[in-house]
Image (cartoon, rainbow, N blue to C red):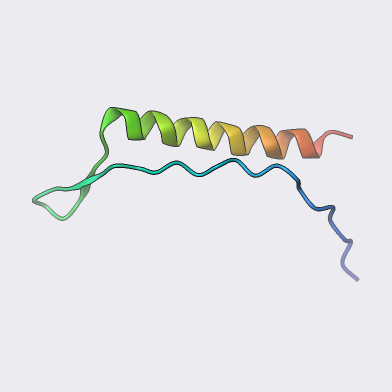
Length: 54
């Protein structure tokens, strides 16, 4: 029997990322998009950490 998990009430807003396709088929993210992605990941991590506290 699975243990029910409580609903997590924080949900950081995902950033809109600006990116450009490179000639080799990859992607280039400008500095601000990279910063926004790092901030989003940090917000998700903080949400998880806050909900793991007893």
